[in-house]
Length: 518
Image (cartoon, rainbow, N blue to C red; front, side, top):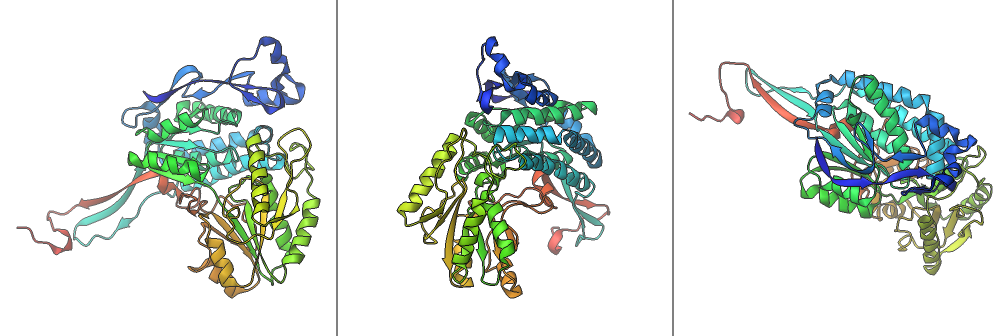
């Protein structure tokens, strides 16, 4: 095993009010930790302790140990995975999915506790990992290349796919389980090993998930190091991006950081899979069914407190229905149940950090300065935690700078349009190209939307929100969204290398294109 070029001398301690510290607390204060309170005893069922080591490479460490990854040429973990037939690897992934099912509720509790999303979304995120495991099991019996017709007699042309080796996975705070699952399950059935770095603000989720996965591997007499994990910040991510032994680096996060990652990986001619930001739009035409529009816009704009990459940030309304829809949306926003994300009646919890609160307030002020009218929300909420009001802003131009800037917060810019051509153009004029949706009953308009003059996004919906993608389709976007795709029927190709193999089983040596070289 060769050392990766960074060390980690941090520990994760679960403290009051969901605060994560990276230093030791005096023993007298250990009783105040959440894990020692009866209502949080389930944390121990996830293998968590008062102090949790933040590095796993077959054994747990974190006090200055060197994080290790694996040299594809001679390392036992990667050799073991490569030698297994793909369906056998699929069986391991099936067991990982089953292990997650058994702990889905308490793992969902932890997602809600550490990230801040409402409980039903936390459980739903774990369900995504379970679902992608099921999906990957099926793919494990389908991956492979075709046998192609050769123009030369007595020759066979085969497309051969082999594992890459080491897949680095860097995930974001907003989906601290699901995004790892999208990558991990498919990377495994392709015969790779994984090194995961979760977000610095959700390390306990990374530890808990890794413990579940490692146990499945070890129960099958496989090294737990096949799915290694490290906690840490930008220094760790930089090391992963620059290390030539990381054959593919999957990065989910902001466009700003994604650009840096892309350059670092490209400088060494590595592979990257980028899933970055989104400035997503819903377009509502005059013939739309408003009974679908209002709940769709509400969920897309407010779900996860506006912190999904697929969150609707722009709502284009035909001028003939603009006022009516805004009025209905204001009434819907007024009914949003805000509070403790663990309360089953709550639909809306806090944003993730104080920095997100400040970003929200800054965007609201910028919108006002650029002519926007705050018709709903726009302020912080006077209660403990990082709570801000779900916000609707009208009156801005479609090309206002604040509208073209992705703000990872629950702010919805409502904009008027007159006709199809201009609104399709406005949908595409932003730098991101992740998700988009129209609401209409006009079939011609729908197919123009899906066609070459329609949306330029990776996700193009009709009569549903921009959020809530299913794992059966490829997920990702164009332009500043990064161009990467996760999940979907051909996603496995990103985690493998392709070779074209020509086999001569004759006694002659004909050349391609009829060339004679005698």
